[in-house]
Length: 296
Image (cartoon, rainbow, N blue to C red; front, top):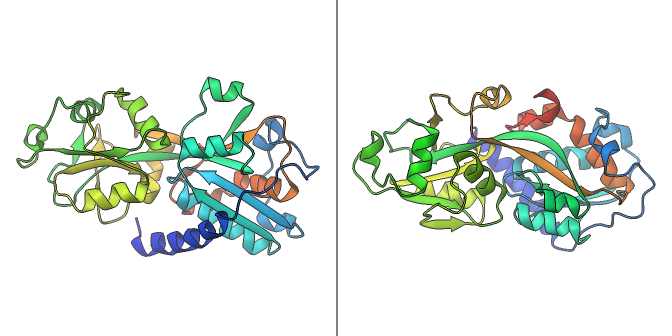
């Protein structure tokens, strides 16, 4: 995980986020294909194929998708200088609500939609797959945990690092807030829904990483694409988290990165152009540290 590269992308996304506060773009002024099945099966067109586009593209949601969405937005705007792309990092649940209420073009979720959300007229299209890294402070001697041990730690059955091969010290449980796609994915995979004994529930991936980096006894979970050298990612059941192990599914704690749209509402030309570009931008997605869905 290259810290300098992450900082560069984060700086770019921060600039995008500032513009997002002015409001979300309209999704009703285009005559392109709808955001339903036709969007999900779009071709691998590159950004230059729609260089005459103009307008705005507003995205809202998952903070875990910051790096990949930021990279996609930057590349798309470079090829389409008359399009303004914005990203509002509010969390998966908020992003789903935003697209439901028409406050953005594309919602961003780091979890699959529920049946209830689909019944409300929403549709998901998987952009990529991301590992959820289990992170500890670099001083921690523990290198590997079983999924069952992770579950026991987060539910309070295992309370001291010495019980899993570490130095003596009470384990400090760091997690995400309710509604977070990362939390939903982590708890679903580990079977700890509504059972976790969190010491802190934080509202962004960056906050989790910073908190764990500053506490030798802390443990947290975060998007693999966002992990840097300030924390240590543990192996799970003997498998280290990486792009390769997410791709071959040998790393067990992983989840989808999803674009959320309305089934019966057409995207604007600019938003559809970005959607199509993103679904075919395998190299950009890979460079952001996640696995493109069309290569899984």
